Image 1 (tube, rainbow, N blue to C red):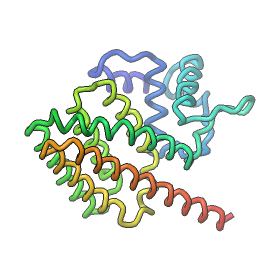
Image 2 (image 1 turned 60 degrees about the horizontal axis):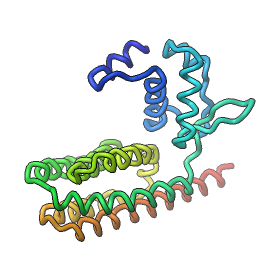
Image 3 (image 1 turned 180 degrees about the vertical axis):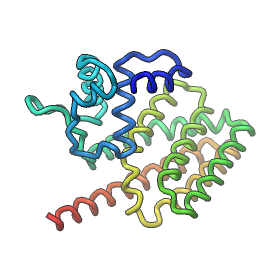
Image 4 (image 1 turned 180 degrees about the horizontal axis):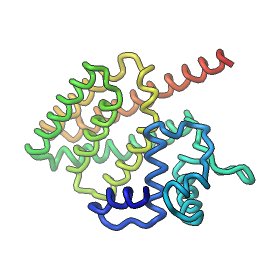
Length: 233
């Protein structure tokens, strides 16, 4: 298994054992293969990946810092629960970073990138029509990251990419978000229009509105999920 993982990352440069294990667990959480509350079977995982406990423990500590894992003394590591506090915290940071980045991107935007962004929105429209929430979430992420890459601030773009990836964990809530996906697609059209006009204020406004509306929809979906779970119990 580890050889397979290493070969997949070779094209992107060298990764330490800890980074490989970190990515493996994080991606499993994002995909939903390791649901919230699941205990991480460290012995089984170490055997599956062919690693010792040391890089596994270090990877779990890094995942805890990033909010993916909760380590309970004498009990082990558990996949962190979906949390409204985490949603609020992440989106508060995203609004600040992305509204600033969107304005910078507007001043540096080029026609080639505009065409690529338009193609992503076309694909998103097709995904929306066929009710493919997984594809829609990924295309949404691609749209934001490609647009922000025009800002010229690589460090800011990397931070945005990290937070955006973390938000992918909440994509399983999208099925309960009603008409939010179609509204979000319309908001992305407005963001792209502002970038196409090279309008910093417009781009900043629409991306902030898009993020705040997404935050509200996620919080509502999480509350509905908690209510249903409570009724079942």
